[in-house]
Length: 163
Image: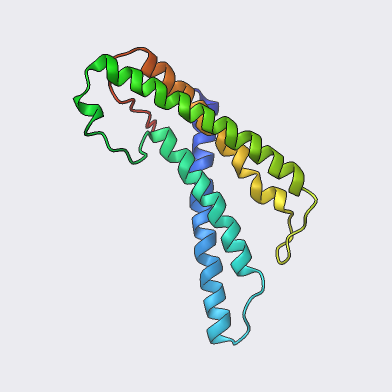
């Protein structure tokens, strides 16, 4: 695995941890300020919501990299290897199509909201929506790798966890 890919994966992992920690700290600060000081924060709920969006998309990227999405495989496990491989190819093609949809629609959202300022936090809504095309590119990359593995036709489930 290239050093650049390993760096990108570590960056995504760190960003996921940071966004989750940020959510926790925002909610904790809101509770403390509201109930201990009777002075609720005006920005913490909005920031926690945006961090949650980023955290969810980063988690999706990580699950795609690891191949750890939930799946009901009781039918697939009983198929012959060639049918399993064909189904894996179809699954990855559907994933690529969805990544294209997400990326194109997400890029439009970023463009349309880049000049819209948030109410309580000092950045624009384009930053919030930027995770969509980022996630789409990452998901598409992992889908292409899984598609190449599935096209080999061995019928096995790809183990893409590089950790």
